[in-house]
Length: 308
Image 1 (spheres, one colour):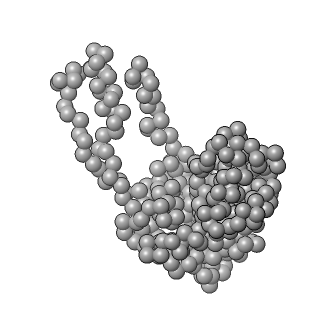
Image 2 (cartoon, one colour):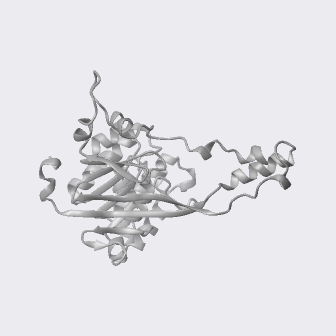
Image 3 (spheres, helix red, strand yellow):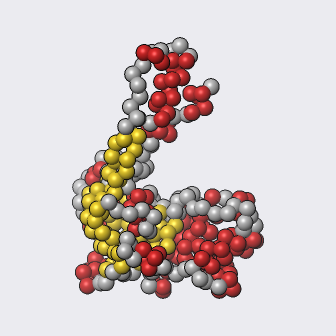
């Protein structure tokens, strides 16, 4: 078991006291727009009598002194509600953002000093993968592979093999991406990341939008990648059963801080049974007091109603 031998394993990823801050507007633009619209419609304070909107900046700490180590061939999960800092953390690990404080090393290479060397070792799958939508999966995958120095013939062979394992139909391989469902597009994104055989794979909610069978196919392939290709995998997910089934250890992130880190079984031991076997969702609720997927306040705002 991973938890019994983890101390003797080689570190693949070391995150040491990492902090990332952002400057954000102190008042959202849409709140100012609502105030202006009310005054125009005769509801509320006239614009001339309204106090001037603050246009200052506030500092938000998205990742707050986070530290953890992921070991070689480990599948490490990060759980947290929307806005907890998961995606910011993934961007830091993949060199898309630089930390304001602390260090991140991938197999001994610093993500700042050795950025290009780190990029050759990693790949990332985002929940919102970008493609050339007019092109086919084949054309998108071959384009991405060539950026990593993989020949067209080798990339085509690997792409067909990977997509077959993920359950994508052969006929879809040469059809435009814009004609595919979001779930099918996500499979192509996963195949694109696997093509380069990264030693550290960063999966940011990779199965979001997939049907249950497709999720199982992706999960099986993630395990296969670790077991047969010596890959280390860090995954963020909202799927509790997926985290429980895949991850050797899990960190729970809340407001940019790690509030717990252990194996799935170890996390469950933190929660009172209350007559039933605790789940990871029980653990999450007990530690954060929040639903796993929170509703963002901004999602209630409908610009078309304000402007009508």
